[in-house]
Length: 421
Image (cartoon, rainbow, N blue to C red; front, side, top):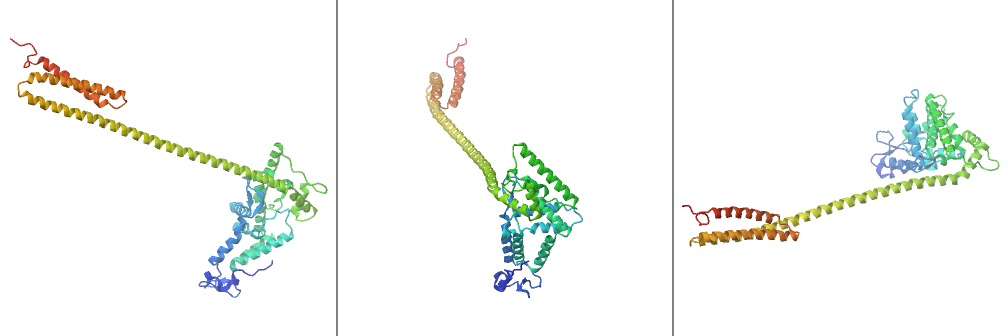
C-alpha cells in the first residue's frame, strides 16, 4: 500500500485543541500524557467528516422505494446481517466480521462506488491508496488494527474474511431483488444468480441464504416476464450474451468483462430514465399526501372557526334573552310602583268612610291592569319579544282578582250580598 503522512500529526503543536493534552510521539503521532495514543476531539470530528461522504456516495442499485442506494446504507446492512448471523456462524469471530463489514468500503468516501463489472485493477489500487490515506489520520493502535484488518480482508484466507465477502455480495443481491426490475441491466439477470455463489461455499447458512436469494431472483424475473416485460436487448455486433458478460465480470477480466462494460454504458441512459420515473412517481405520491394533509388541516381549521362562530352566536342570543327579561322585569317593577301607590291612596281615602266604594273601584282598576298586561304581552309576542314573565304576572293578577271578586260578592259589610233577618 502507498503510505501517506498523517495530516493531523504534521500540525504538531499548532492544533489549539491539543496544546494542553497532547504531545507528539517519536513517530510524530499524537499521544496522551500516559503514553497511549488517543483521538483529539478535533481529529475525531475531522475523520468523521471525511467518511460522512459515504452517506451521499451512490451505488449502482436503487431501494424498494426507488431511492438511489448509498455506500453507507450498504455497509450498515451488511454489518447488521453479520450480527444477526452470530448464532448461525458460531465457529466464526462475528465481531471481527462486523468490523470488516463496517469499514470495508470507507475508501469509496474518496473514490466513489464503481460497479463490480466496471471496476479494474487501477480502480482497486486507487481505492487502497484512499483507505491508507484515511487510516493515516487515526491514532497508532487503531491504525495498526484496521491496517491488519484490511490486509486480512484482501487475502480472503481466514474464515472471517470469507464470511465478510459472502455477506458483502449477498447484501447486494438481496438489494437488487428488492429494487424495481426495470432498473436492472441485462447482465444482472444472470449476475444475480451467480454473484455470491462461490463465496458462500463451506458455510451452510450462507448457502441457504444464497439459494433463497436466487429463488427470489428467478421468481422476480418470471413475474416480470408474465407482466409482458422482457430483458433489455444486448449490444449489436460482437456483443456476447449476458451470461458471458457475467462470467467475465465475476472473473475480473477478459473480453466478456469489456462486453459487460459496454453493455452497461449503452443501457445507462435507459436505466436512468426509469429511475427518474420512479423518483417522480414517489415525489408525486408525497405531493398528494402533502395536499391531503393540508386539506385536512384547512377543514379542521374551518370546523374550529365554525364552532367558535356558533358559540359566539349562542352567547349573543343569551345576551338578547337576558336583556329582554330585564326589560320585562323593569316593566313589572313600574307596574308594582303604580299598584303600591294606588294602595296607599286607597288606605288614605278609607279613613273618610268610603271603604266600600273605593274597594270596588280598586278591584276594577286591578282587573284593568291585568287586562293591560295581557294586551302588552300580546303586543310583545307579535313584535317577537320576550313576554313570558308579563303573561305569568297577568295570569296571577287575574286569579287574585277572581278571588277578590268572590270576596266582594259575599261580603256582608258592603251590602252587596243578602242581608240576614
